[in-house]
Amino acid sequence: MKKTLILLGLLGFNAQAATFSLDAASQQPFYQSTLPAEVYQYTRHSDLADLHVFNGKNTLVPHAFISLPSKSTVKIEPLKFVTISEDALKNGASLRLKIEKNGSASNITIEDNAQNIQQDKQIYLIALKEKHEIIHKLKFNWDGAEDKLVNIEIASSDDLQTWQIRNTGNLLKTSNVANSILKDSLEFNDIGEKYLKITITKSADLVLTGITAEIDEGVTAKPIELESALTFLSRSEESKTAQTNIEFEATGRYPAHALSIKLPEANTVVSFTIVTRNKITDPWQHVTTGNAFQFNQAGQALNSPDVTFSPLTARYWRLQFNAAGGGVGAENPQVSLKFSPHMIVWNARGDSPFSLTVGEDSANTKPSHFALSHLMPEATADKITQLPIATLKLADTKSSAPMWQVSELESSYKPYYLWAGLGLGVLVLFGMAFSLLRKN
Image (cartoon, rainbow, N blue to C red):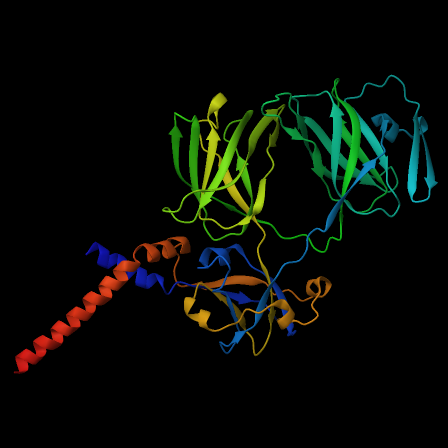
């Protein structure tokens, strides 16, 4: 009886799908759309083969998946900086500034006449080229100040008087050789202004020795990044290997490229290994190894950066922590997947309203996915980014059951389909024979 109920439930699962409305009001021939996270929760296939776009007459319209280049090359440039007192920026009488231009470079000379002023900050000034390439990250080199959080602020200006803060953060360099940690860079929003001001909380043993700029060349568009928390499943300890295994489950078929790990205890450093699989019966597959940390000093928190890897889709994620030195702690970490959703270009053929469906296997027999070159000849990245945007909004679902569970149950209980069909056939034949006997 229990198996029969499972079978009936699985038959109900087959109808599961989700429909999204497409906002395309300007009546253009082509649109671009970014897929929301819900698409990956309802799809049955990691390659989104069950995704289809329909017009108002419920007729399939063609679409193509696209991938815009986010980076081509990264150029590293050293920056010249000068030390300046905080008072000098506020008091023009104590500051003399001279800028010498030599071709495309600018050299800045500063004389600070302020004497014997107690400062709690170290300030560095950088003069950039008037028309410089957009900087997206600064990397710092320094001596001393080990095992200490270094607070840093980046600001920019065009006139050395009005400053706009672009980002704040922390630097860290540990002295532990076995589990060394180096957080030496900070991203910021460069808008092309002439000057940068770097402010660092003063430390007696910190000596700044260099600043380098990372410049993205050929940036077309910064990809959207979404985040989805993993669901905790179980935790086990292996005494022989001094290893803690913590397992999680993804809520959808996300094309993950990074993992965010937030440790439960402050001032913790632990090494880990990430392994994944899609079915409980599958062997674990190695993804990567690394260190996770969290430090709190003077009310400032510093978490380890995201763990990056080649994009992959997996249902089950296991983090194997080395339990030596206290390990991950008694509580479980918070773990989230980071992924860049697919973008599609689709042809607005026919009448509106347009919609997108996912999770409907019966539509797979009708082709609607094309190569971009076939859908939109002579397509370039610039042309695609100029296409009107049609946003997707979840409109209807036939079930709220997770698709991961549906597909695995269907696979696990597939033999029961065959036995149920055979049993049903036997019952039909028995009924027919019994009916003939009664007539005779």
